[in-house]
Each structure stands twice: as C-alpha cells, then as structure tokens.
Length: 140
Image (cartoon, rainbow, N blue to C red; front, side, top):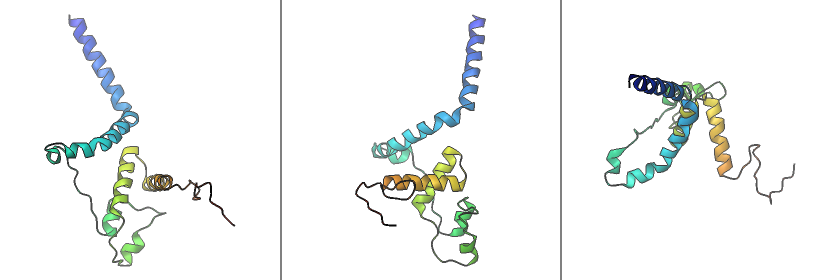
C-alpha cells in the first residue's frame, strides 16, 4: 500500500515538473480557446461577474513607452520630447501587441511585426506588402 502512495507521489511530481517546463508549448492554445469562449461567458446569466478584464487605456506616449511599446526601430522618445499632443498609440493594437508579447514571449519589434502580418493577412495583403488579389496588376 505504501509503495502505491510513493508511486503516486513520484508520478505526480514527474507530471507537474514536465508540465511546468513545457508550459510555453501547451498554454497558448488554451489561452486562445479561452479568448474564443469569452463572449459566450459574458452573455451567460451573471457573466459580467464571472470574468472581466481590467481596462487598458493609456492616453499618452509616455505611458506607451512605460508599457514597453517602444524600441530603437519604433522610437517614441521624439513624440515625448517634442511635446506631441496626440492621444498616443491605438488602444486595440496596443492590447493585441501586449498579448502577443506576453503569450509568445517576444520583444516589441517581433510582436509588432507579427501583429502587422496578421492584419495584412486578414485584409488580403501578402507578407511582401502586395495584394493577394489575382486580378491585381502592378506597373513598376
């Protein structure tokens, strides 16, 4: 009986350790699945109380820089130093880029590139920037 208990503890520790070290391969699909069912959770009775994300809104370039949305290739310091009065970066794009950075553990430039490639693909534009429409004619 005690051997069964030791075996159970050993396999539990082995499974937990393996799951912990491989979490970056199996956690993102679960998070994507949760994003897919989140609207249904909100429509359920009492859904607003079950789960609600904190709003992420920043209204300035300083806050965008503090959130990590700046790099050498995408420099916001000129906007901050020049007293730019605009509202900052697009909130929806910021949320998506921060989500990509967190889930895939990418730097800002790589996450921004992946976000733009997804937007291009959704709008029928190839990775090279040309439309994927077969009727497109280009004169160069």
